[in-house]
Structure formats: structure tokens, C-alpha cells
Length: 250
Image (cartoon, rainbow, N blue to C red; front, side, top):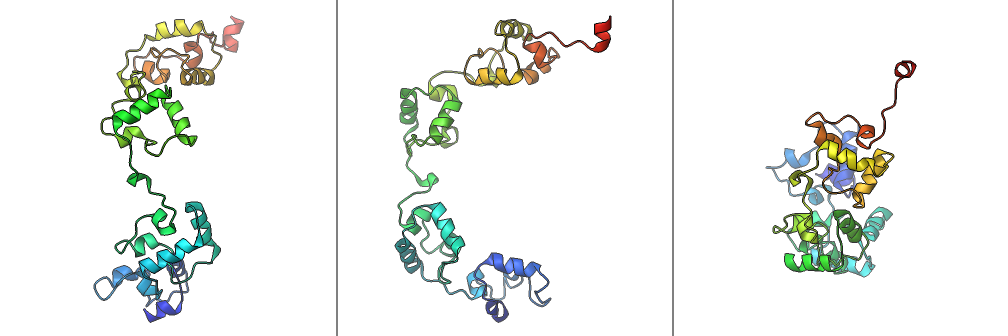
């Protein structure tokens, strides 16, 4: 332990980088937390000899810095301005002595997503339907825009056990693809031929904006390929197949 402390490392990562090099003597273990697990090991702070402040004093110090968010906090950690008495990983050092998230640590009051209060399912559903969101893509874009209230989860399908489907949540009653009854491949081809779609990419775009009827699968190659009615996207979109040079000479 005295040898380790003379190195004046402040973080476990520094020890590991040094331990992998040829500078570590053979009699110094690379994984001291395992080797000395039952013979006096306490934690990495003790092993490296880093004397940290108590949680309350460390938190008071951090709050005086005025850091506003995680990005500013990370930049401060990289800057080299962190005193040895403030741990690089406070969430581990103070895990059982007061740690309550980065917002509490910095004094910003920001709460981790999993600790935020969310609206009841029916209220969240009513809110989303009232502002007119119709598709999963619209919801994702709205969520990323910054307009989504913090009380409505970014992933309601994971946050609410009541969640049945996006169609039910958004009020469109659209059914997931795996539960739909699609048109036959021939019916789909006849319809698509009237739209003069020029490429697979255009087909995908029209699917996303709702132009393609829900009775046509968004992944036709996979769906129609199961019963061997699929040929190619060119055939599916109503385009004549290109002839080979031998066919042209016939």
C-alpha cells in the first residue's frame, strides 16, 4: 500500500494504465482489490492514499463552483483543476454516504430521468393526442425538440405498463405491422403502379409520411418473401425488368 501511495495516483484508471506497463514490479499486484480482498482491502481511495473530504464538505465545494450541467462538469474534470480531496467518481465514493445524483452534487436541482415524476398514463396520452401527434416518428422528433414536458417520458412504451401500442397511445388506432392483414403482393403492386414510384428510397419516404396505405407492409421484401411471391423492388413498384444483352438480341 505504501508503494502504491508513493505513486500519487488519484484515480483507479491511472493505476490500471501504470499496471499494464512494464514499470510495475512483479511483486505489486495489478488487481489489489482481489488479492487483498480478505486481508485488509478497503477501497481504491484508501489504496491510492487519496484523502477525500466528507460528502457534505465535498458537495459544498462543488456547489460553489457554479457548474450548470453534466457537460460543464466533465470539462471541469478534464481541466486538471480538481483537488485531490474531491473524488473523480463521487457516485462510487459517496454511494452510501449521501450521493443523490449529479443535480444534487452540483446544486442545480436537476433530477435524473428515472427519478422524475411522470404524468399518469391517461393524462400523458390525452396531452399527446391533444397536440396532434400522429406517428411514432413525429413523437420522437417532438421529444427531441425540447418541447416535451419532463413529466411525459421520452419512451412511454417503456415507462408505462399500461402502454398497448403507439396507435392506442397516439389515438390513431394504427396496428403494429405484425398484427396487420396486408394486401396480397399482386394487390399491392397494382396500387403502387399508379403512384409511379421511382425507387426503394422513395417508397420508404412515402411510407414514413403516410402516403402508402397501411395495408401495404413497410418491409415488403421480408413479408412477401415468405410465400415466394417477392421478385424485386423494381418489380414490386411496377417497373419493367431490365433485359439482359442476350434477351435484347433475341
